[in-house]
Length: 468
Image 1 (tube, rainbow, N blue to C red):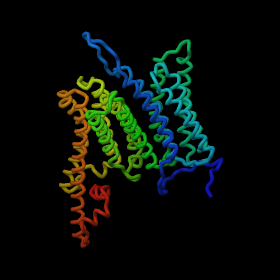
Image 2 (image 1 turned 180 degrees about the horizontal axis):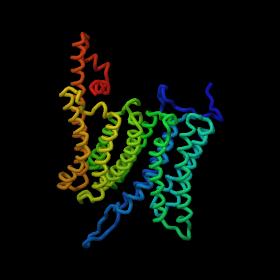
Image 3 (image 1 turned 60 degrees about the horizontal axis):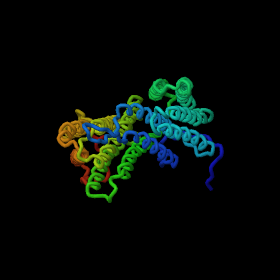
């Protein structure tokens, strides 16, 4: 008989020396995803508005300049993302299915919803809502961590250390709202400085807590759960772009051929980036957060950088997609090109760095590698690094020659096809060479195993580790 306890005690998901059990994605994560979708849609909306101008007697429609939008959007996105990441950290440490536990989750959920409401419209007009939402979300985190402080002695010190930055952030936001948010002396510019300080404070606390804790006071995260939550946010960013390009109005008439060409090209560009993002997933033992504090913190911040630039890429793709119907023969504006080019470059570079944190030990060229394996590993990393530079090359060559929106999307889509095909070819050559060397090694030891048997027994990570 299954029942939900009214008052339960949070349980650690695991501890040092215990085996990590598999955890399915909880329905509360999917519930939170809805608010992330709403926040992303609200943040991206001002970037997709058209301005009406008259130049040399001609009536023109141009997309809004991002000059005065990007900083506000970054602060809004970071406010939502920091609150979400803190929740993911908590749920990767503890399990609690009690009624009181879910009420605690709801308090944080309410705060995150208020933070999301602060992302709607111009931040200059809505900053008080955002500041209030941040305070409520931080109060929700305090409520969540309070019960482990009381009931879970093993994690008590860790939870106290986590709560101190939340309290400081609440006090900082309260100061900002009281000093610069009232009707008489409301000052958005000064409150934005407070918001910047609060965002940096959140980021610094991620570094400070594990460094300040003694080794015996640290509690291991459920790695696969934490990594899965990060993937959820990344997938939501992809999904928001897909959602927008499908529902964007293309014309008053029925879809024509160019609509399907544009839709297919834009969708492939997003799909290609997703292929790179989700292609390699390390196990818990190989993950950066298991290697060291340095690699764990590097992984965390690189994920944030990746998500920020991925959102920029998504906004740029949506702007280019919109231009294919609003101004198909006009050159794409500089802001849209920069969003796509720099967004893709930094996203791909972040993916390379994240792979190196977790899987560098298996794919880095080593003096112990046989010469063919060494050369293939060098080629694999070269292609990965080239993938972060290629958007700049495509922009300076093909897009300069054909600056219209549809040719630009086709050029970047073709670039993603080339990256994926070359990486797949090198990976398969590397795997094949390792299998051949393993067959030769087994034969020299008197063990008769054919290639098919090895392919069934050994996955790619295992044979890369064999020669690392």
